[in-house]
Image (cartoon, rainbow, N blue to C red; front, top):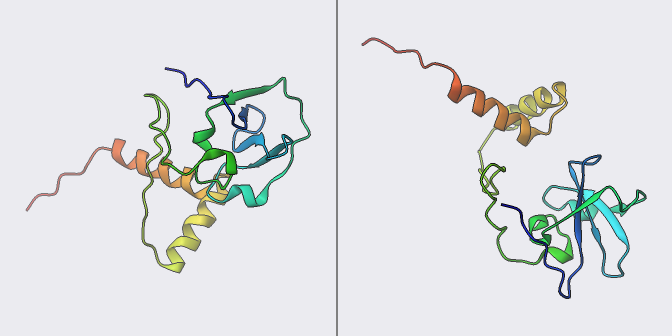
Length: 133
């Protein structure tokens, strides 16, 4: 299932294979901006200098939470099957735990959320050891 972008009276949002961890979208004046695809990423926006040819238009609602004004305020739409979920999980951690996790994620050149998801998915595929009473 492919999302069909809504173009009536709204700004456009794009994805790029060359910048998979960033959104590219129009600001209120129609200029293309790029920003990290993360909560509050719009605050780190810069002008997009690439070509429009390599951009794939996507549903503006997918950028909700990034701070981009074109995304609206309602919850993110459900992801079609086969794509990553838009649900979030919060984990309480000590300062030391968080520092250790961030260090390990940076060693693997991954964002913390990607590293944590990979580790959790690996943990559920390992065989469980059966303890005897």
